Length: 137
Image 1: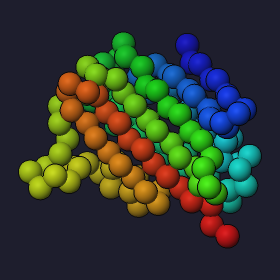
Image 2 (image 1 turned 30 degrees about the vertical axis):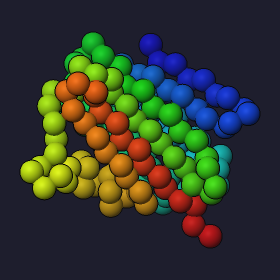
Image 3 (image 1 turned 90 degrees about the vertical axis):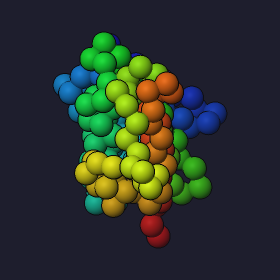
């Protein structure tokens, strides 16, 4: 079952979904709603939805179907900050190349859609992906 909780003092939305493909649409819609309420243009909202779907799909592909994906998003200084986390045990292995860069087409796509992306994944800590999309003037 998914869980959405908003804290008005900090304007943070938390979402926890099962690590299953059929729940990715819930994450897409929740983030689209937050971005829409923050006056992002439709093109930026579509970028955010696709980036969130790719992040969740990456977590699902690497993880345990019994696990959960944790997502938080907040509006900070005219930008939407999204943190996608799959806890320890949900990631099958390290996805870094020898040069330290992240591999994978999904991450390439996320980086092209969002303004800032920080990615870390390993078997002992899980997957953390922080994405920022700035509100253009």
